[in-house]
Structures are given as structure tokens and as C-alpha cells.
Image 1 (cartoon, rainbow, N blue to C red):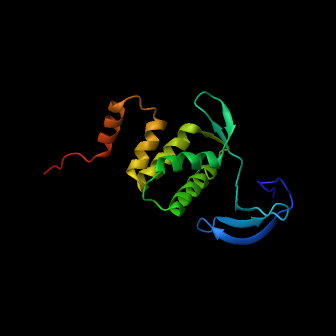
Image 2 (tube, rainbow, N blue to C red):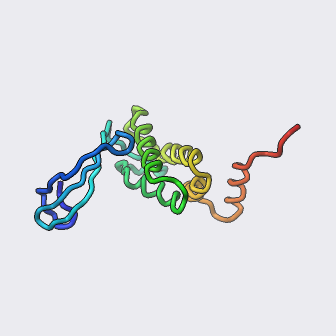
Image 3 (cartoon, one colour):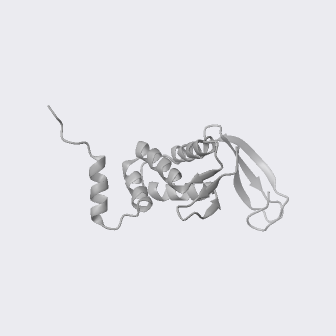
Amino acid sequence: MRCPFCGNVDTQVKDSRPAEDNVAIRRRRFCPACGGRFTTYERVQLRDLVVVKSSGRREDFDRDKLARSIRIAMQKRPVEPDRIEQMISGIVRRLESTGETDIPSKMIGEIVMEALSRIDNVAYVRFASVYKNFQDAGDFDKFVSELRPGPASD
């Protein structure tokens, strides 16, 4: 593994342990050349996924890009980082288990929204505002009103 600090390719593993509910291995590494320490994660990848954008453009699926967008939505929310990682891993496993290598971006967005709605409503609304391209406060109001339960009926 190449050192992110000096580029040395001869780094040493100092510690390995299961992570993300035993679906990944966390490795602490040390670079003898510069003394830098860093962490890597090893995960099973069932197949190479390609995201098909609504414009038709295709790009390789990037787990880190998915994680960044979810973490932005979850910023300053009372949800444990491990819970967020489990959700991200679950989303990736669900995408890989579709049996398809070409995944429409719309499907990814819907799966993320479904997962966020189960964990945190504020993060769900934040993500939806970007995903659904809200233009003004009325878009928020309409979306949030659909989340609220209707009046109780007798």
C-alpha cells in the first residue's frame, strides 16, 4: 500500500481488526520511510458497478462519493458514525445484489432516501432537497408536509 504522505510503496501493517459489523477489515499502517501512520479499509467487492446518469453519461461507482453525500446530509445530526457506515455498506450491498452492473443514478438516490428516512428525518430532507433539486421554500414546505401524518380520523 502506497504511503499517502511520501509515496513509499513499502508500508507495514501494524494492526488489523474487523470493522463495519464484520463486512470490512480496518488496517493501521506505518511507513518506515517517513514515519507516517494511516488507516485503510478492505471490503469485499462483488462486481464493478457503473452509474448511469440521467443524461446518459456513465461513470464508475464511487463508494467514497456516496459516503460524502450521506455525511453532508447527516452533518451535526445525533447519529453514531458506525451507524452511518453500516447504512452506507448496506446501500452498496443492495446495489451489488441487484445483479446488474449498470445502476441508474435515480435508483441510487431512491435507495439513499429510503435509508435516510429510517434513520433521521432532517438528513432525509437535506438529501432530498439536493436530489430533487428544490428551487424555493415552497418545495421544502410541500415535501415536509408529505412527511407529516394527516389529521387523526375518528
